[in-house]
Length: 467
Ligand code: ATP
Ligand code: MG
Ligand code: MG
Ligand code: MG
Image (cartoon, rainbow, N blue to C red):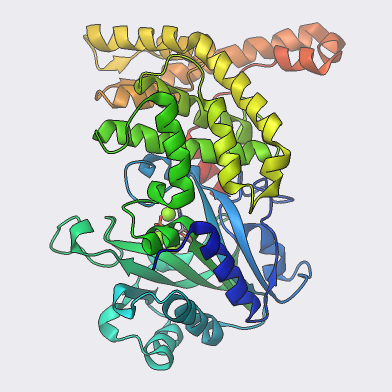
């Protein structure tokens, strides 16, 4: 049964309203009063305080559709069928109210009764020690054991940063053997695209202090996360997340602007999907007030925009085009996220400005890289060149590394970081000498600041976990 993404969102939220939940709008992508995360990456993240009992929720049962960003997934984007740096997460939450006995049968009811997903397509995993969840699935719900799996901590224990966490139970959709990697042991939980994890039911019973120390929360909470685009992908029976109705409309616009046809060539498809994804994340980020900069969230935004611009170049685009994708992203998402409509002009301006500034130097930077790649007598790109690319041509280290790694080459990162450190030091002493003058105007102070290096997504992610 084909159902549009917007309809599916509505039917989920309505279903949980009928189970006594209060529907709340999505929270901002910028975490409020939480330094453990750079960007909101799940439905529960903005509600940690309700889970710990630190603050009182408006109701003990809440349901949302939360905008999420997960830059650690960036390497899968456009390559596999199911990851985006931006996605929406549907969720139903219980703050020390109902627990597994209700949450599990409701999830099953929504999938098999409301959406009428055939039971034989669904598989369920539980945390290896969670016999309670196992029994509810097999006895109360009646899922045959052949469709059940017990999994270890890395798969079925949910935590992101510090705060509430706990064992979980996940629902997978079997897309059929034609999507399998073909390995003899390919089964639920395999990294390939046959069994797609769609819904994670988390039973948050513990608190992680951020240093890996777990203590019982003293509360029994439910936190579920159902991938909106993944659900739509399954319901619409399309190959990947980018072919879901609303997302596909954005990709079509990009095809039109770049002249690149989807489905004709593997590399072109990857670029089209990457640009589509990055335009979704950046439009939503700017809509929530993030601006390009050399640090933190602003750097994530800049990095995504520059990566999108580079993929535009790979598709043969000469000028700026990303700004012309904004209206389509707003149009496809403005119904559920009215803030995008309100901020449309700002979003366009910010993207146009960032794109134009990178466009002024991208060709020179690419020429420098191409020359090295063509004439290389070494596989290592010098730290000096990577520094120049960053400092003069606006190529973040990660972008340089990505381009080189496509040719099996690498960067002398130690030297790069040393040069960055020296530059920072020079700027620091220059600022000292400038004294109070540097603070005269905000612009002046900002211009005097050194560029801050980007730590890379992986490091950001682990930093976010450690903090
Ligand atoms: P996966 O194992 O596929 O990376 P996950 O276990 O990291 O997913 P959860 O943290 O359990 O994901 O998030 C809940 C749900 O959100 C997932 O079951 C999935 O449907 C969806 N989801 C997670 N990451 C992404 C992503 N990068 N893009 C789209 N949907 C996602
Ligand atoms: Mg993941
Ligand atoms: Mg998973
Ligand atoms: Mg999961």
